[in-house]
Image 1: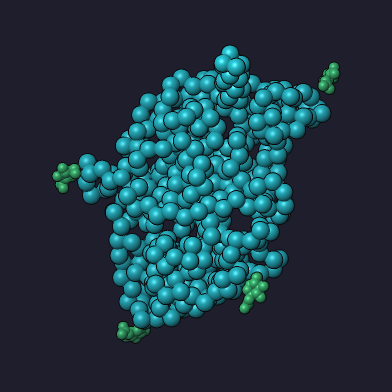
Image 2: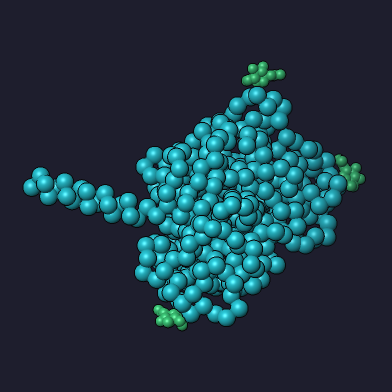
Length: 446
Ligand SMILES: *[C@@H]1O[C@H](CO)[C@@H](O)[C@H](O)[C@H]1NC(C)=O
Ligand SMILES: *[C@@H]1O[C@H](CO)[C@@H](O)[C@H](O)[C@H]1NC(C)=O
Ligand SMILES: *[C@@H]1O[C@H](CO)[C@@H](O)[C@H](O)[C@H]1NC(C)=O
Ligand SMILES: *[C@@H]1O[C@H](CO)[C@@H](O)[C@H](O)[C@H]1NC(C)=O
């Protein structure tokens, strides 16, 4: 009995080792990547070191993306450590990939042949898919103790998709593809935690900067989240003290771009907003619409690819009605729409506050709990389109075709907030604006 138990243990040990496809040079608890805002597209871009010799490559951050995909067909991917994945190999099965029949003529990506496996890579900005060969190479990231960035750590067999990406024009200038942080085994967060094992938690956090002038930060693994405010760069503030938590939902339909596919769980992140408040007063929305339903309809998605939060039309109208009523005390007047915004106001008597223009505050309430809300002030709720006009930074998503997800929280609303996604316990931790602490996402010490 005892020896067969030992054998069983050894066997399961072997299984878990052979499943952890990545190898590592040391065992950090957390890693960091910088993230910057592209002023033209409003996309968020991170820089990853890949290949041998290590080369910087820029990728658009796609919170709900399945994996890292990049254009390898332009001839610029040159790396002595690049590996293709042959049909039937462990990386192909981890990636849930399909075996390819042939390498199409004209493809110049390394390793392209008729026995490699491929995945479909989604360009969520342009819409549509690319075919990407499952590939492996070394990547390197900086480790962190949460207080500042530390030594560089590498992962030798990071799985990504070398795609036949013929059109990158929708992506921020210089970006080679997109980096997925979604719920998939080959998305960056899960690959990093399987590479480093037990003490590297299946968690990650994003802190998007509000301007293109300085970088924010993304954390992988678990650590404190220490920032140093501009007014005293020796003062360490761990912003996790501001965390509130709500449940993350798994959707059974994929709502990535224009198409909706029912099937395996979506790699995207959903929460359930149960009501919206303006100046602490609930607005009139149909709460049935907001509910997360078994069919995959309803609920609230979080996106780093949508620049502004999109609301189903009845919710948008209710928000504007309440906002108009509350903002009236500032003697503002409504002015012509400024695309993409429809509701714009003269500055009136509104002042500037440390949290942005002093507009009425908007809060997303979770779990029907009046005390569990994500507060948004001027910095996240409006855009200053000129020195005397601000526009509500929410968009009317319409109601045709049928909107499956009535609220999609976009990047403008995420800026200078820290959001932690805990994949093991399916919880979102959010800080609301860090400007309360006079902290910006660019205040992490790289
Ligand atoms: C791949 O192509 C080569 C050359 O055309 C051929 O000999 C080989 O049988 C093919 N392999 C598979 C798995 O189709
Ligand atoms: C800055 O913060 C450090 C650490 O909290 C503190 O010791 C120092 O007195 C502060 N400096 C100023 C000018 O407030
Ligand atoms: C609320 O929304 C649900 C789901 O969209 C719909 O079936 C219902 O008729 C709506 N109720 C009202 C009062 O509009
Ligand atoms: C309100 O705005 C109007 C026109 O912009 C101005 O004439 C008026 O004096 C303002 N009232 C107050 C109380 O500020």
